[in-house]
Length: 123
Image (tube, rainbow, N blue to C red):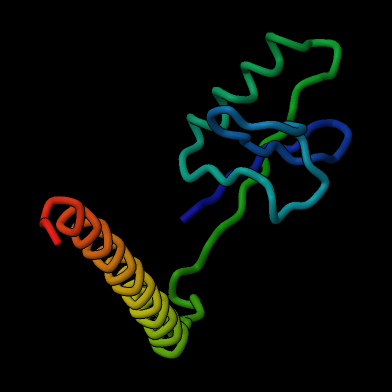
């Protein structure tokens, strides 16, 4: 499998900002670079930059070969169990808070109803 990355003449890598993104489109860190799995998409982006800003030169496309046979498999059992437990704990705490709010609301309603009944009943 081949992965493609775009690099400009200054040695910076293209970083897609996404919808409503902010910041620079060119970053120093390779880790932040946009990775393309298809050469056509990378070529299209290079053509766009070449047409739009010819004074900066043509960006380069770097191709990297990935060997799936040498892929490192990460065991996610512990981290997912930890995440699930934390979410359950948050949900339990949220349920307790909602229960306390509901009890307080019902007590307020009870007091309000008792006050209205006291006004209506003759002594």
